[in-house]
Length: 417
Ligand SMILES: NC(=O)c1ccc[n+]([C@@H]2O[C@H](COP(=O)([O-])OP(=O)(O)OC[C@H]3O[C@@H](n4cnc5c(N)ncnc54)[C@H](O)[C@@H]3O)[C@@H](O)[C@H]2O)c1
Image (cartoon, rainbow, N blue to C red; front, side):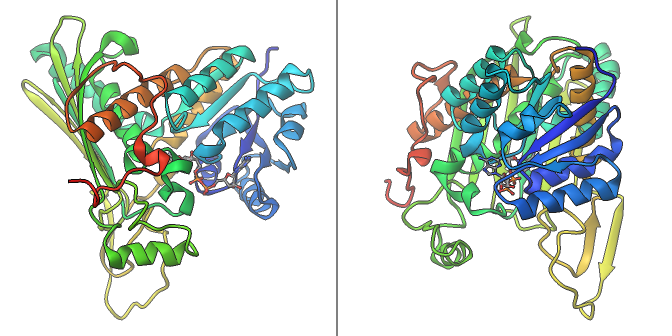
């Protein structure tokens, strides 16, 4: 099937689906032609955003089967929650297998699965249905990451040696939906939710341009997890109230802080280090992504809150609470950074352009489900290290079947030691 333009179906109409839709103003050769979610109201709202932005005329479908069966849909973007990954993918593949629908590709949001078994199943299902697969890790497509990597490798590394250390951090004050906070549904706490970004962005920056992923081999992982804020009585009560009693962080917390140190070896046997930090207990202006890349005679740094645009509102500007200046915004007065085009700066726009171009060219995207599996393997090894409080050699035995205790509802740091 040779196409000049793709019809995209979006599965899920929540937070991230809307990010993708808004990013589409910078995407060529594809239109958003379908949306399906558990809420018709949410889907219709997302569909009208797409129409308003001129990025497609999506039909709201009642089921994934109906959407995949529609001849206007050539590829789907999975933007449903982590706990629905496998059922969503099985329905896509079943629709194709039963001859009701045909797709070129599937793109899936992070994390690919809640554990290695799920992530690998996603990869197997995509292969079974002969689909091109894209793993939606937006941060490696962020213009400052791409441009920074290019400059550092072309100038600094070419003349003085490769970078040896990358730091990546993602921090905000806590997720917007209850399921993210529930270890069983989400797959863990902040480590699973956000370290997937940091691990992959750091690896991407450290990999020589044009070289394959396995030019860096993970050797050892040392990690730590804690619940620093949300298990305190006052904050646990806020979580309980905001979730209609579904969250009890005194008894069933998930980590709100995690760090990892991943040791890699490059092709020449040189040690390369990745250091990541993630937290749901950072109260600043809003979401902060920071990255650093260090080499023998150079360094690079990115901080998304160091934005060019800042506004100041005096205490007399008593506006309503919003998220219009920056994602996960925490305040509306004082000196506030504004991320002028979040969809572009966080990488969604370039990511979606790449996925669409790859699907149209019949090529597997450069970031695909195999990368999603690799990221999950590293995250699960990090959980093992944190649980056992020791460095773990990669790959550890039992990685395929391992489920972190936080994802089984068995993790409670206040009860240990
Ligand atoms: N790349 C990023 O930075 C980023 C940011 C946020 C979320 N995410 C990822 O995106 C995914 C969705 O997160 P979100 O914040 O949009 O969640 P959300 O809860 O805001 O939205 C989830 C949407 O999926 C729909 N849904 C739930 N189960 C479904 C099913 N079985 N079939 C079809 N639709 C279903 C819901 O109706 C809702 O519209 C998660 O996997 C999350 O990890 C990625």
